[in-house]
Image (cartoon, rainbow, N blue to C red; front, side, top):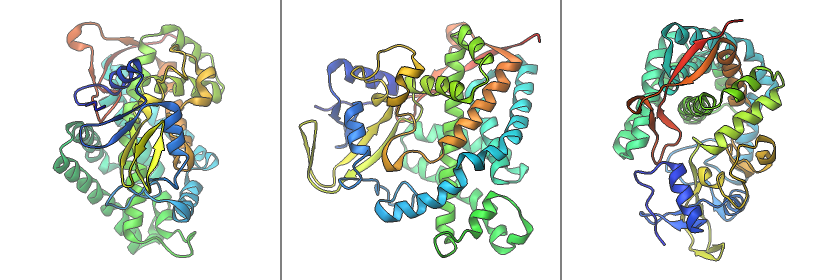
Length: 379
């Protein structure tokens, strides 16, 4: 059967399919959309039959397969290891405190465009060593990227991508010419020789695009989703304030993201004729692993908020050899941000239909805009 996600939120689309008992369906453009948890896991963990080489553009590392993917993934993992990103914790904390303080002065904020995007951009600039004057350009880019993705207009998407590549080029080129003048992660990448050679310029741009472009938008959307969950549950806010353990904190954030996954989908293409759940697929079949749907599969999840019971099956960060390499960095940033926000403020819903916020619709998840009130806590 065919089913068109257009105009639906990813959550509504997935839940409709689950109610119909359809873990795999054909989309309107000939693609196959997989919302079942077991089926998505099977595909994600079988790169031999379901290739990640789906784009005409260079995408490192997750646009590669096999030994080539392993080499680039190994290189990238050295930058994103927990021990490496933890070195930036205090810098992220300073960024979070400033973003939260400004929002508290105003008494309210858009959780996505003001809290999320501003924190994401400033934290990324600290981590990569990018100059402060790029902040507004990057903020504008985040919102343009969300709008372009939501529109589905390929020309707009291509233009937004080109705009970001230009920003990356402006950062990288001075480091290529005079690396001794810089001391930051971006320069380390430019000078990296783990592959037995230095990276070529397009490779550097691709890695930085993956680290920044997609992650900036994703971080903003994550903060929107978590703010929404906390604004609707004062007891959960209190529990997090009393929980210093990072693992407990991250389990709650992962569960909130599972329920409304902003990382909607990843693509694959079949390398030969295959069968999934008695659905025969030809070689060259385009597939969308619908993580939002897989994370709401009632065959696996009990429908409640249950961080510990659901943790093992949670696919917010994907699965298999192409599982997200940036989880440690993202969770550190999120944990620090919400620790500072909850220490300083009580998050409240903005009541009134006209101020209820705007949901993201396919192909973006979470919230496009989410106003929240912030009430300063008395310590």
